[in-house]
Image (cartoon, rainbow, N blue to C red):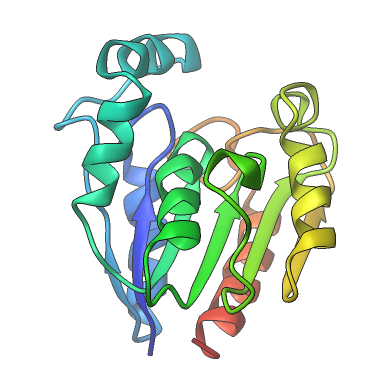
Length: 185
């Protein structure tokens, strides 16, 4: 089974992120959920992003880099450290990006040996308006083993069961696809 490092989104390590990790653990995977916000969670994206700005990009990435596992999974803002580690850490065996994707040029070229899966809702305004969709399409074109999975709907944090944006049907499919991917790592 896979050893996975799952990074939370901008609201922090919410019960929904923990529940997703538990679902993966229930299928035999070893899942680590580092708390990059030191126990803080937020009710709105604005509040979570304000705290992120206090920490700074470098501080957030440094916190993520302290954890180690060969498969990196990130939810929204958590894609930043997941993507950085997948692209720069020797021995990376895979990456799963949920709700977000940044241009691979942030961290250098995408490594040929690292497969990647990107998951988002097809009408998610954050994913579309902030360039994540363009980055995801470019990554799929660039990487030798990459897939973009778009789900019906417009919610940004659809996979967090503790939020009103949660979509059980989409998350069930996301979980199934992620488990299939992890089974090959």
